[in-house]
Length: 243
Image 1 (cartoon, rainbow, N blue to C red):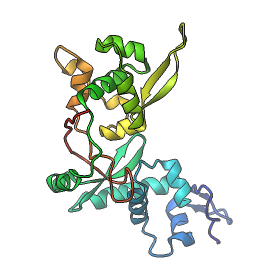
Image 2 (image 1 turned 45 degrees about the vertical axis):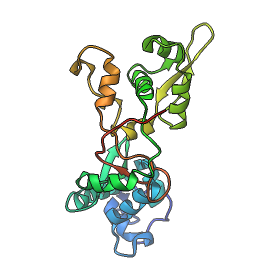
Image 3 (image 1 turned 60 degrees about the horizontal axis):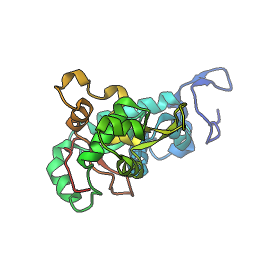
């Protein structure tokens, strides 16, 4: 029985003779995997080199394999990295990405102190927290909640860092633009989805959104080994810097 043509979506199903073929069998038949057929190793290489979150759709395109085989490969890679290894596999924003192990947190922190692009300022955290919990939000609404005359600089800087994006115009007079968070926001704060944001009732009085967001420990900054965003830290605390 010949192997399926490379490049299409590979799902388990009947073969030419009516015999069911599993995703794992397709994996071993594909010439792409002749060298040992190490799918977990291939996924580790792809995720490390990508420097960004890869979801199942993207992994299907890159490998030609179906969801079943890919899920199995992800699980095996997680098992492989759960031991004495300097890397971890993080599930975030509907996909996966490589991160450095918190075991080596202090050592890695020494490396990135001169390369990190800078952490969020208090004003940026305040604006981002309000957007995260109340999105979509207009700049006028953001100003009113913050009690300031202008949040334009914070919105601009957060967009430059790709933490927020325009989310359409609000159907009111003047049709102002609204803003919402991005997948990069989830990645920065180590969240799988917005549902993983801290519950506001867990915090005391004051600006609850800001307290909640500041309580999260964001991963390592977006500087890495294979270009921007290639490597992050699983558990590196947040800090402050001048605007």
